[in-house]
Length: 147
Image (cartoon, rainbow, N blue to C red; front, top):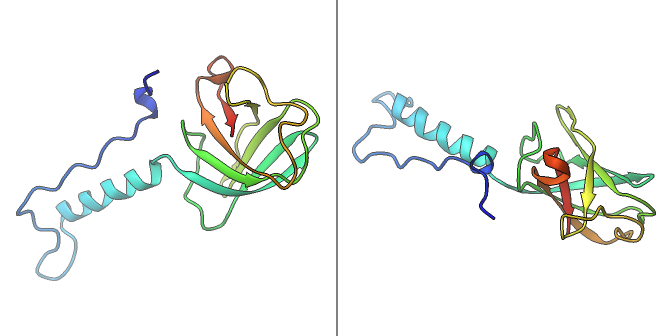
């Protein structure tokens, strides 16, 4: 299956040879500012593996970003959140992410096939897991794939 265009980051445009990036005073020129802004936007918005702290209450895994993590404002396709489970699952599993700007939506967690929601025994305490956001899951409402 092809990756949707909305889930793909725009590539960085290669700077042209001979363009001045700093002026005679050592300040960025407009060309330098544009190039750095493109690199910044690419890095900030690229798909990432983001380590998180996890806390679980009644099969809801709350993933809290570390202070040194990249900025997350919304779920983005193929972003992956890594964590070590603090509890065993005993029923249907959901998860949410807490960012420095607030709490994102609680979403269903699916087994690797993406068709069956994770349930009792699929998450084991002290085991490492990755939750990858997939926008097409749950009738396009989005969800996580557990790995």
